[in-house]
Every structure is written in C-alpha cells, then in structure tokens.
Image (tube, rainbow, N blue to C red; front, side, top):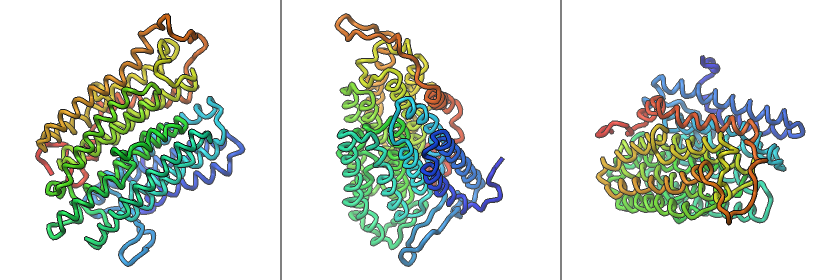
Length: 508
C-alpha cells in the first residue's frame, strides 16, 4: 500500500530532500536525550525510504519513464537555467539503495557509537542526515547545474564526519578529503559544466544525450576527460587518495558514506553524464573514450594490488572500493548497453556487499579493539556471526555465486565482449582473482588458523560479538547479498527502463 497516495509526485521529490534535512534539525533539538535523538534518526530514515518507494511506484507506472518525467522546478537562476529535479530510473535506483541502507546504517551506528563511547554523537547524526538530503538531491537532479551544486554540498556536509574523531590524523585525513574533492570539482568539473553550456546552450539531462553531429568531436573528447576527472568522488587514479584518507572516520561513516553514498554519488554522476549528456552511442567516436577506459581499467587492477599490501582492515577495504568504483566507470565508458546495465547494477550490488564488510570491520574493532588483519587469527571462534557475514560480503564483492555481486560482474563482462574489448575482459577476470587474494584470507585466518609460537600472546576468551544493533545491521545486509542473487529481477527491470541501457545483448 502506498502511504503517500494522495501526495502529488512533484511534492514527493521535494519531501525526499526536505525530510532528511528537517530530521537533521530535529536531531540537534533532541541531542540532550540520546534515546529520543536516535528515535528521530530512525523514524526519519524510515519515512524517507517510504517516500522513495512511493516515487518508485509512480515512476514504474509509465509516464516518468516515457519522457514525461515527474519534475520539480525550484528556482530559475538564469533564463532557462535553474535548480530543478526530475525522476528517471537510474536516479530511482540510487535513491532506493541509499535510503534503504540509511535505515540499516542508523541501526548499526547506534550500537557502534554507544559501544565505542564516541563523543559528539549529535553532530554525527545531524551531518549524516544532511548528507543523505544532498544525496537525494543528486539522485533526482534534472540538470548539470543542480547536480554540481548538491555534489559540492555532499562534500561539505561529510567533512565533519571524516574529521569526527578530532585527532591530528582525522584532521589530516579531512584536509586530504576536502582538498582533492574540491580541487577536482573547481579545476575540472566546473569547466566541464560551463563548456557543455557554451557548446549546447543547455544543461538538461536528456535521453540519448544533448550533443549531436554538429558539435566538435575534439571539444566533446576534452569535455569527457574533464567530467571523468572532475567527478573526483569516482576515485579514478591518480585522484583517489581522498578515499583511503577518509577511512579515519568512524566505521558507520566509512560504511554508508564511503562505501555507498559519497563514492556512489561519484560513479552515479559519471554514469548519468554518459547516458543523459553524451549518450552511450555518442562515446564511440571520441578519441578520449578509450584513453579514460584504460585508465579506469588500470585503476581496477592497481588498487587491487595495493589492497593486498594493507594489513589495516579498513585500509584494505578502502582500496578495494577504489577498484570496485572503477568497475562502474569501465561499464559506463565501454559504450555498450549491456555494460552500462552492469555498471548501474554494480551500484547496488557493490553497495550491499561492501557495506557488509565495513560493518564487520567496525564490529571487530568495537568487540576486540583490533584493526590489523594480522591480529585477527582465531577471531572467528569468538565472533562467528561477524566473520560469517564478512565471508558472505567478500564472496559477493569477488562476484561468485550464490551472492548478488555475480550478476553485475556478469553483465560487465558480457558488455566488454560486446564492445570487443578483450583487454578489459582479461582485467576484470584478473581483478576477481585479486579480490580472492586480498579478501578470503581474512575469514580463513579468523576461522581456521591458530596463533604461531612467535605471535603475540593474547586471549580471545574475553571477546564476544559486537552489540546487538550492529549484529542486526550486518545480518540484514549479508542476507541481502544472498537474497538479491536469487531475486535480482526488480533491480534488472528498473535498469532496463534506463534510456539506451539493456541487459540483452545487441539492444540499445
């Protein structure tokens, strides 16, 4: 049943942005009463998800996906150019993922923040809600101007979360985070947006793109590079260092904002630019398409190799995320409808798999105070639920059945074959082997290895599972990895409604 049945679709778009913003204010107002503050956070997250479900319901009825989009015009800044929002299937997919995982992460954060006795919890939950508000605006942005504005708001609203601990390391990580993301936006993305407007006279997202044969291929090739590097949240090398630097943040931040919302805002933006600004077919004639494709492919492999060298668990997961994000960029740049479908699906599959791994990393730190993989020998005997969930998330990231990560990697590989890019196919396969090499030894070490004589002598006898809210959260996401493998069709049906995107070979 649609709880928002009597509400105008355009009002639902506004509510999806306003509700988490109002929630952030209520969090501040109830900050002195932790139970009430956290009830406000959970209630706001549930309301937002119900709104996104209502938007999805409206959009799946047909008109939204036939070109007559649900839209909301907020303000006209210049004649014919302002802040406006539209509903389209790619944005709906991202909104569903982010809003649902906000609920789960809020449950997790309550257990983590209390179990770890974190300070400034009110500021944490407030900034979290502000970040989700900006993510919703990005999801439903109707033009490049709107996307650019809220892309920057997301950067600024998450900075306090990255520096939450207030330590010198947190401040340094925050400077790297802010410096790279703002500099790439100003140096590249802003000029890409301005260049697009100069060339076309519009910044609107349109099915099939806004460029045509009358536009200079050289100019379009330059714009593509500016977009790819200007959207720094996609973490394409060499502008990737902000993501490992941001791992100084509390694990709930790493989980949602740096495994789902922030990084996915980056790759979502690249995918949206490819589909609605250039058009998938429009990439085939650009000389820089292959250049950026191979840079993204190199990022997939190099970051996987770096991940293998990291003993700190969150650092290893951070470089894994850099690699997995470039899977989506590769899918966008292959100029294949199937590859684009795989890229869109990977937004969801990677989100549920990687957030599970980050949840487990946080649970381990709260329960055992261990951060390094070398210190986790035998931990699985005391934390079997956590390490089982980690195993499930790892298998999903690797892309093996019966976990949902299998499907997105399958479509990406088929798309690379369709585009006749055998080098990319080989890179995807090698990357999966590297995924096995840096992820599976962790649960193997935890479940089956025993401490050697030269190892530090500590006892796991006092270590128990993490607080219940954390276990509930990682249980839900690990179950999602399994359930979505057997029932991925709703996601696939939504992706097939994206203009120019199809999970069937040869279709555009």
